[in-house]
Image (cartoon, rainbow, N blue to C red):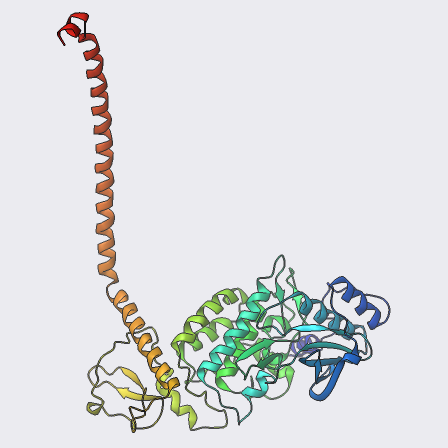
Length: 464
């Protein structure tokens, strides 16, 4: 690494003078400046005597997080230890933005204790951080869980990016800042100390090196697309169950330089192909080439229905489990899924109790996968969940078959539509001709009426 590049990266990773400019530089103590902010944004000031304070559940550079109870709510008490003006501003940024936004996937703030230590009172996430869940050997989760977590994170960021009149950029998206509740089914984005409103020519560094976009720590101008990069690293993390750049070493400078030079996390074969494609789009070097979060949410919503909900994501510590899902890694989720009878005995396949069994078609050498819906030993004994899965999958087959029929018959449909359009055009011409003829006949009738008026005389009336 050149000394100039190393010096530049280290200076931006040091986080000096990198506080959001929108928080005014209030004079006085942290408590007095915070009190003004609470009044300005109508944030509830909570008396510490009303809180039942419990055990410590987390630590950070800011201080500690404790569990507690307040007015019947389970809460997280985030105690801040303020050493300098920079830390004070970071606190004020978090209070300002958390109090002014509301989304199902963003942690809720109840209020603030202004007595020392200054504390944020927030909803409690009993599942802890996503980082701990991903990297704990005892925790098992499925592809469906991975898709759900990544999608919920994307929805939270989409909400921030769509705020008017100025989009908000989180700038510190990472798995430790994502919390789990409701039995790990619901994900909440937290830690808003680095959030900023979108401005032109932003170059201030913020965030964590392993998830940080290269344009941020290199000092280049960046936009909300830096959140897209960070989200893609989280997406990779939930599928790989590895810490980003685990094989690069622990030096933030080395990681930053490697990313700046084009290094990205390895895309493992067992990661579903549509996710592999999305990863590469989202962490591309040029920010303008990354998709917007609106598009990502749309893609992830579609993929969530296509990918398996029940197959475990392999542990990074379990080398055998990765082979268990090799068979669906290349499964074309947009291809034909016709409901048909296959004599499995005619094909060589591995016999196992996997949800997906591999199947090799000898006729055309296409790879396929068999999704087992029943226990082969007791095929008639299915519980309610299994029956629900079966019904959902049969419905999935029906929809996919209908979709494939539309795709297969698109040329015929286009031809049919062209014929119908031509018929409409001819019909319109006929209608126009009829209108002209009608007008002509109307004129003739009027002319005949005029002639009749002249023919009528007193003598003709007497004859009548």
